Picture 1: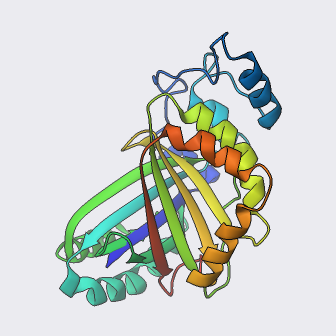
Picture 2 (picture 1 turned 30 degrees about the vertical axis):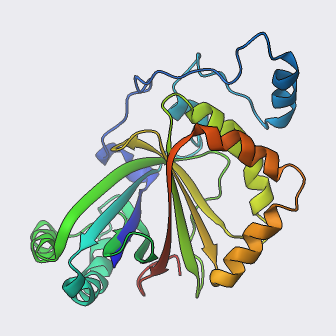
Length: 270
């Protein structure tokens, strides 16, 4: 079973977090630049909620929320199958203590085990504790792991804030590896598309990577069960405009992956 954690650095502690350079140094391309496609260009302009010009700034500044300096960390642990129960027990005992440390500027957003998708994984977010306790925790936890991966993420400005919610819910993490240079296009399309996915409060949060694997997008959704997930997703196809948005975003994707996850008892997202 895979474990995952999503963490957030609070604005008050931003000084303790490595700051990202304003430009990011990433080469981006425009939305529609061909003079031979005036009709499509006109249609796209009417479609976008807010069209941004990637030539004027880095996509991290154009697409991220400006009113907050929150930075998110997604950690993915591949756990030895025979150690999953012990791993979960250790995390549920230690992580709450870690996050009670008032001087550490991050908060746990959610922590899950992967149910369907890549198995033997755990996902979780930021935490804090005394140096000694943290060192012991990492040493004991490390003996249970096969591998680790993390990413630093920013929030899309048009997505919901990932706030605690009551359960029980299952969560779907849909991850997209975009073609380099297409983040602006993705953001412009999804600024419109997210409006089709709010009726059942299923949209939890949307993020894009800044450090780690680049041009990665993560959409986090919550559903009561797998049948509710299917019903909500099918309903979106009956809304005028959803099919067109899907049609134009698919060519931007190199790879995509879906994981169904179950929250641990200590997760703020239940």
